[in-house]
Amino acid sequence: MKKIPMTTPLVEMDGDEMTRVLWKRIKEELLEPFVDLKTEYYDLGLENRDATQDQVTMDAALANKKYGVSVKCATITPNAQRMEEYNLHQMWKSPNGTIRAVLDGTVFRAPIVLDCIKPVVSTWKKPITIARHAYGDVYRGSEMRITTPGKAELVFTAEDGTVQRQTVYEFEGPGVLQGTYNKDSSIASFARSCFNYALSTGQELWFSTKDTISKQYDHTFKDIFQHIYDTEYKEKFEKAGLRYFYTLIDDAVARVIRSEGGFIWACKNYDGDVMSDMVSTAFGSLAMMTSVLVSPDGCYEYEAAHGTVTQHYYRYLKGEATSTNPMATIFAWTGALAKRGELDDNQPLVEFARTLEQACLDTLSKGIMTKDLCNLAQGVEVHPVNSEEFLLAIRKTLEEKLAG
Ligand code: NAP
Ligand code: MG
Image 1 (tube, protein in one colour):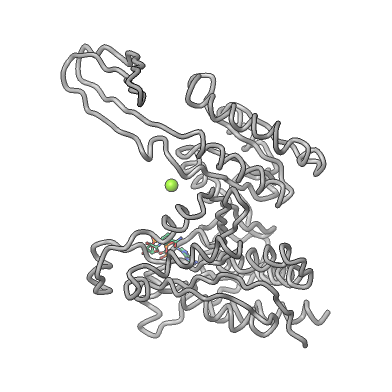
Image 2 (spheres, helix red, strand yellow):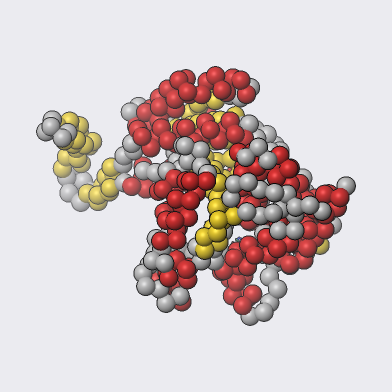
């Protein structure tokens, strides 16, 4: 069989531990035999980040900006214990944080769904994608513990010295106080990322806040989204037959539970944090959660939502075969290859990516699955396998599909 050629390189960011082991095997079994894989490789494994003073992470992020599409393996974010384990020069920052800062993006997380794994919510038929604004609000808040009676105020001093002042509360006893902020520019980036992603995936977009109570703060989010929609996206949405709709978060929660899925739910930072855990748990397993970072200027970074699966790696190092689920990592590759194909007008590459995804789903539908999924499967005879056996089973299904 002739391998599928690629024109523009994909930015490949290798990572750590069990996911690094799977990364290599996924390439060997499922990609390299079929695609003339063209990547610009960056080794974001912790040893190389340390050896390069973390320059490799910045280089990879800039390459992502240059080429537009990257695929990233899970990486260790060092803590005190990792400093010792890897004998690090410095407690390097989270690579995801570095890449996010360069791309200024929004994170979209969607579960991989299939018939034999039933979501807890029985009406859900299609994935629900959570778009989380990853900037500001309570994550960058300032807080104070109040211990005596007194007056709390909001004070804003403009550069020219003008002062705006508002009483928050006159405390008669102990209490708590919090100040949070966001920026129009960040909210606008969030909005554009969401509108672009909705168009590129052909899904409608919901956005919810608590604007009835938060008449300035949340209402600003609502207004910025609406203004950008009306002036930049309305026509494109109408042409694509898609809908943007805003609703109060209480109403959104009720609608999400009653829905069939198949839409993007944009959430403010805290709402997205909480709701994405709720949605992924209700759909099944962390190992089935895909994640893509989309920048407002249209750069894409695909990864798995889970980490490096450290406990499995320690067992792997002892020579044990582990049953680590490679699905989200495979889908990071297929997402990136399909997007590269789409941008390069390389239809065979797009088709290959979709076929590989289908081969994964077909393999699971036959009951061949890693241990994390076995308890969730319904209406199928389950055959638990280790990672290696699972990859070989996918390869076999893929070859059958490509031949037929
Ligand atoms: P984790 O690697 O996601 O693993 C947590 C647990 O979830 C595992 O112990 C395992 O449960 C289960 N699990 C996750 N992925 C799985 C898979 N593919 N197949 C089967 N089971 C899976 O999270 P963590 O243990 O909190 O973090 C480990 C390292 O990953 C840390 O160093 C952290 O910094 C890093 N991390 C990186 C990213 C990223 O790069 N995006 C994200 C999160 C964490 P059982 O042990 O019960 O089987
Ligand atoms: Mg959370």
